[in-house]
Image (tube, rainbow over all chains, first blue to last red; front, side, top):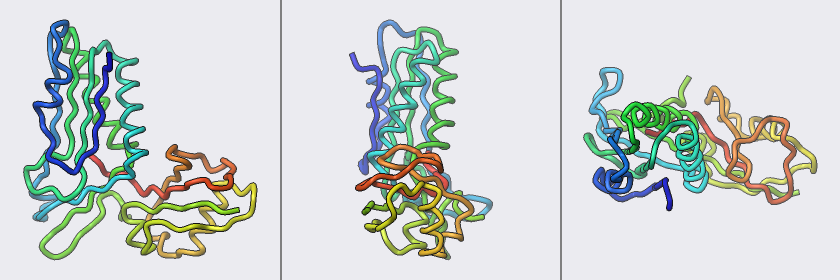
Length: 140
Length: 80
């Protein structure tokens, strides 16, 4: 049985899909992290975000995170979904769902997964403003 | 020998390319390639740092490149 679900898509991410994948009768809880596009950064109004990925490598790095989370924490299943393309305010760029027998492991694994994703997975976002655009994290 | 170099994120904008084929000496390391690329594309200096992936895995500076390797320029990531 497969315990990980990894996805990069230009379609709308579905929280229910991640939930359904990890849900299991042996589990006492599910932790869900849902990233959402915020309307401002450093007090500047954001109009949209554009995500791009080095997709084959990003999938591998996401799989590594899921496998590591399974090895490190007492969890049952983990789903990591990430969107690419243009996202509007309120849209969902990332979802992480983790199920476990006891809640602490699910919370910890979920935090580990999103923190590591933000450090290692080759995905980039460009913030668009009324007066220009900027690649996040790339400017000194 | 010939390798392919892929550019992502801000590097694509700075260099003006998604992908190039690049000729280099055999037994050249990742570090040597980084220096070559900074000479060829001085605009890359506008990024404080970038990582290198070889064949879809992060690579250390001392890795020796091989014919037909696919090298990716990975600027600081910002997914999530």
